[in-house]
Image (cartoon, rainbow over all chains, first blue to last red; front, side, top):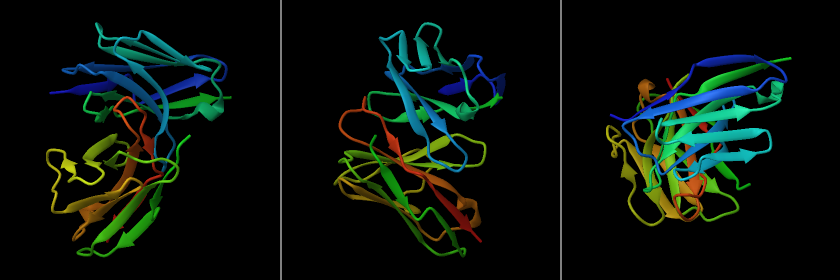
Length: 111
Length: 116
């Protein structure tokens, strides 16, 4: 069955460092992969989408890589700030348009 | 970015009653809307996909007679939890997408349902 694993339930880093979150998947061939941010009690907010034929995408301090051979995506936040503290979800998308979400990684950036 | 609203933001009801949750796309036409359920410290579980003017497609294990979805217009979808029970208590989130599957989904703020 399809499985999505995000590296750890929680990640704690110091302000200014780069946070790296991992999303691994099995038994899936996604057409694209998305990363979302979710704050407690709120709906997810879209951050980045990367397609299966793309290796890397950047947006301001965010960078996403997508390796379909390793079946893995890495999500980087450079120069992290306490305001970046949230739960980050990866979601795999099929051509039919449905997305399957991972359990998320809760990032805490300490000042 | 596009805005999706949900109403109500929270609701408490007695067991056996029905609850309707509205999802609206405020500044775009939502070709497709999705309904998710999220339990504490768990990920979003897709319940159903609805396209405007057609019947919703439910995920395996989701009772279509219990979770009624109506997508009557390009800006409004409703989820009705019929005969709610305590195990239906959860965070319900809708998302809306315009056009093709590569377009991003915009999520609503969620509705916290508590069934007593």
